[in-house]
Image 1 (tube, rainbow, N blue to C red):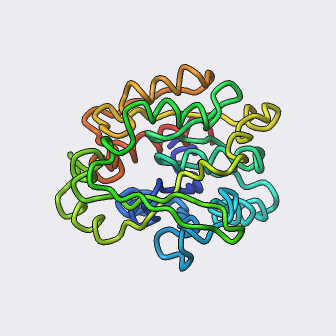
Image 2 (cartoon, one colour):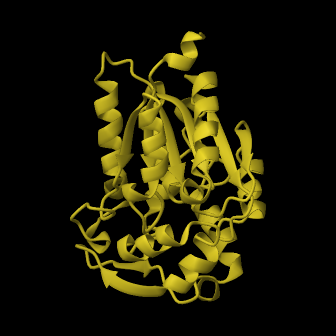
Length: 269
């Protein structure tokens, strides 16, 4: 038997906006059953993390749980390398991890995710995404404005059930959709944080890491067209596809995503 097939890998899974580590339960179970180590991260103000998203001072603070997971992995003889998987807005967090821990990322996997580059920073991605019209696109979702510790206004969004059903979970099992409506929390895009435009600009570290982009072909949120728009502006990523996958591919097509992660790990680990 090929030793690559039996070697234990470490997968770090990062959720998207308003979600939490819980959304990875199917894929995490498959990975663990296959003998791999899995760290599913709750970013700050997400999942079971006790902080409120409005209290966070920066995107860096929001992403700190991922940085902590990366630092912990790096402490294993200083050589452990993980497959880091980011979904949706989680792509921006894993891009930050790529900058800070390039030597500890075997491959970065962007799953229907934001993928910035030096020529296509987050502000450009947000502008392109916003062309569809924020309020119309987000349907029954609720936007709110609050103030952080410096009294700077910050915007947040709470996903509405009709938006989730139509744009995110249209192919996912109904029980997963119902569970998600109970578990999602308000989220932020951190558009007021200038630091997000600095992510992926350090080519010396960011471009050292192998990147794979997983296109979800039936995604009605990050549409296939929008995903390929980002891929074109961030050259160098290997591209994979999952047919019939909605935005929440880890719930609608978990086996297909698991199989791709196994393929990626065998190639890049």
